[in-house]
Length: 333
Image 1 (tube, rainbow, N blue to C red):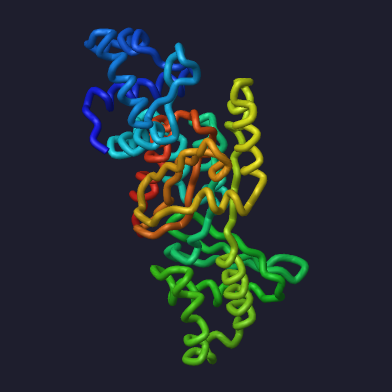
Image 2 (cartoon, helix red, strand yellow):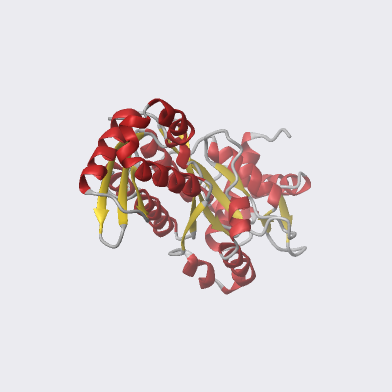
């Protein structure tokens, strides 16, 4: 649908004003924001945007508010121009640059930082463990017939505890063997190829084969799960405005439903920020600004900021851009 630059400008003003103050836009309100047009011209433009389905009137003599179509147009234009702000999410840069923490801690930390910065609940779904590039293995015997495994990757450590008995020497040999043979490959490659390597190196790994077998079994189980971390720091904002209480309840109910969370974070595979706008009917209960978390070009997880139809799409998108850009800068070592 063709829309003039002036109409685009007016529509963006209408959406942003409604997001900010929950107030319908009027021709006078737009003129006050500095658009150099007569009130009559602005009134005609608002009428045209309403006829095109981008705005609607709640009352015959009242101002106009965005429709779902209006929100969609706004975010599609917004995403083509979204830029990360240098001052935003400095903590994310620090967190990602330090890969001495466990992967779960890093993912959880990203979710909390984004939620705090945007004032909306944030969800991270880790579903690309097999894409992680391996760097090193540290296997340590513990008390009570247990062994701790630390798997160093380009995005942080994966930790796992194996219910087996092994000596210090066996753990050291297994650590050296796995690091030597799988450094620079992915978790998926290791899972798929370990059984074939068993046949050619049975003598070499015989002393610590129980460690290797248990580790592979644990990684397969972990890789088959979609690990979801929900940061609720922004949930309070949803309840601050009584007018949005019903919308807030819908969002909070989605946060408690794993299936709905998985569906809401589904991505098209384009590798960029995407937006799903809440519908006025029950098909889409909340809006989601989401993006893939890519490390070395491969998806590790997806992150989504969840809220009502009337939320700060611009600020959220720029915050997510900081995160995905920082992760993309991670290089192999």
